[in-house]
Image 1: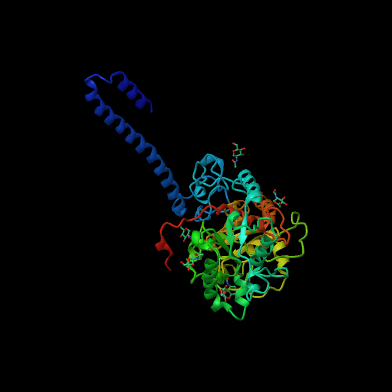
Image 2: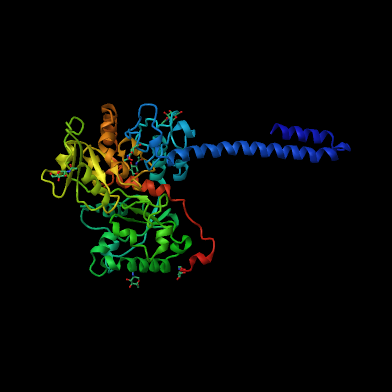
Length: 472
Ligand SMILES: *[C@@H]1O[C@H](CO)[C@@H](O)[C@H](O)[C@H]1NC(C)=O
Ligand SMILES: *[C@@H]1O[C@H](CO)[C@@H](O)[C@H](O)[C@H]1NC(C)=O
Ligand SMILES: *[C@@H]1O[C@H](CO)[C@@H](O)[C@H](O)[C@H]1NC(C)=O
Ligand SMILES: *[C@@H]1O[C@H](CO)[C@@H](O)[C@H](O)[C@H]1NC(C)=O
Ligand SMILES: *[C@@H]1O[C@H](CO)[C@@H](O)[C@H](O)[C@H]1NC(C)=O
Ligand SMILES: *[C@@H]1O[C@H](CO)[C@@H](O)[C@H](O)[C@H]1NC(C)=O
């Protein structure tokens, strides 16, 4: 910059001199060269910076055992330190990269210590202050418009909230709609809406004898045609400011005949695997699968947890098969397949770690179950976009193990010091409340957390650039 002003100063002084004609091109060339050099040097350091991280992310560090003592649950040199689907967010490497601000901003910042290990990060939020500030803003200003349907609509059972308290494996979907409709986020004025809710229920469609699983795709297609003819809002953005919520995994193929929903709308779903073509990470959001439980467990802090790890479930995937093969007879890892003979809750209360192992889907209610019973979840499900990952730092209260590392499971879990375990468990108790539904929502519960995830996505609206996009 100094060069530039110097040059201008010089030019001003010698404006009329003959030498100027000679001087101007030379100076400009010099300045340009300086700028180019400056640009190259600054952007090279950027490139190197990111390459450096990429190398770290992509490498499985088997040839590269860490020198220092392991800093986080993943403690074997064989185990990739970078299998965790999320990167840290803290002040140190990114100069305070914003926690709740944007999804993409976060992925650029990888929190590595001086020797390449992850630093301890004990906070349950990526950035607590930003989350709380944004949460208040969201709570005050976020508005949702729901397409209205009457009680006498032939599909009222699918479009209106259920009139009983949701329960069971897919309760999250019904809970969300029921709570949303009574909440202060609703506006009757579409002009004030940030987002539009498509209120169909995948779970109810599935059980409706007029529709059933095979009819869901046609129903959704017709529904979108209907609202796009009756109202102007869908066409305005091709669906980008619309969202729906579904927990049953059948939802992932439900949009096959309504591809604009899949490509443009925000899909809030339990089966949030970024390995599936129906789910688009960052655009879509992960809905926690929560089996609502009534009886509040006893004092979770002082319980004696005698078993190292626990799993119960059917063998319905190669990942579970692998777990069975390796650990079925183990004296510390209790992997039960088939019917449990002891009460499920007792097992979760009596184990230090509770395994969430990919079955047909990446998602099951097991994560929420283990949090509920104060057991540290171990997630063995590759490509799972974990719920509330934009807000919560999963590394602070869970252990993520790549499916390839199942043979190392015991080594990994036993490698976690008792101090580290206590920290993980303390954080489990802190995040518990985010994985619970209430008919009248309670601040920071599952409902509000989903609203926050939606709020983060409210401005990601794709403008319609040409009418050709429109032809279907
Ligand atoms: C761990 O590393 C050793 C040697 O580096 C290798 O032989 C072994 O297969 C690895 N185990 C896994 C599960 O990757
Ligand atoms: C971030 O920076 C602020 C102020 O510099 C500090 O108070 C806070 O502890 C830092 N947070 C983390 C996670 O390092
Ligand atoms: C959010 O809004 C609701 C309804 O106005 C209110 O009851 C609640 O206290 C608010 N939460 C926060 C953290 O301000
Ligand atoms: C679409 O509108 C038609 C005509 O009003 C109605 O018969 C049909 O049930 C609607 N379909 C859906 C899926 O909303
Ligand atoms: C929205 O677009 C569809 C298809 O292009 C068209 O049939 C419909 O009439 C449009 N809706 C409105 C309200 O203009
Ligand atoms: C576990 O026990 C069963 C029978 O009790 C035996 O057939 C199987 O080989 C054992 N598996 C392992 C991995 O030790």
